[in-house]
Length: 248
Ligand code: IPE
Ligand code: IPE
Ligand code: MG
Image 1 (tube, rainbow, N blue to C red):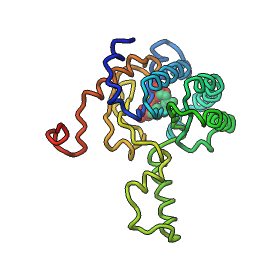
Image 2 (tube, rainbow, N blue to C red):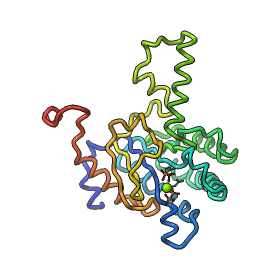
Image 3 (cartoon, protein in one colour):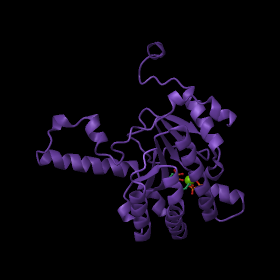
């Protein structure tokens, strides 16, 4: 077993890890290749990290794969990413089932190209009875979009008398987000050296521990994942209380 892996306290594992997979383009540039080459190599890290999380016993892994803002990229890149999605789901279905991993998505997938949408639906269907870990792909996702959708639904329910204003609580908001049923991420990892959130899970990461690494996503391996988890396990999570209180 890897030395780092053996140091992880399995009783203090984050139940939910969220990742901003960043740096594919710069990784490709470093290798003198077009950006799409970086995305293709990023798939290997998706496989590694999904497997690594499932092996440890992490219950939910949410990967930011395509933001609503990413539509603004050159169409060549957007098309390549969408094609890669279809290809990857087709190829990885067996591995997901062998590893007992259930595929889910957050984001407006109905607005993806039809082939990508259909591939996702069939992947979700084919893995729906798996129970070891949820692999959640954030696709055509942005947190502000999600929050606006939730506000619209809640406003409508109040207007129609389905709920009263008093019934609007944090839990109710949780239940109107695309992540309903999934506990909030305890650890958020962003690769590539950028230190920002880029419209990802804004509500859900209220108390997440943030971990930034300079490693580009295609180079991010299980060992890097273990390092992030070990870092997480050394932190004191206080949730507004004092250190003395939480150490009691
Ligand atoms: C992340 O890598 C993948 C997606 C956003 C789809 P980038 O493509 O953002 O890579 P950089 O940040 O340009 O290096
Ligand atoms: C965030 O990365 C979105 C994904 C990883 C899918 P970006 O590369 O799009 O973020 P910015 O534009 O650098 O903030
Ligand atoms: Mg980027």
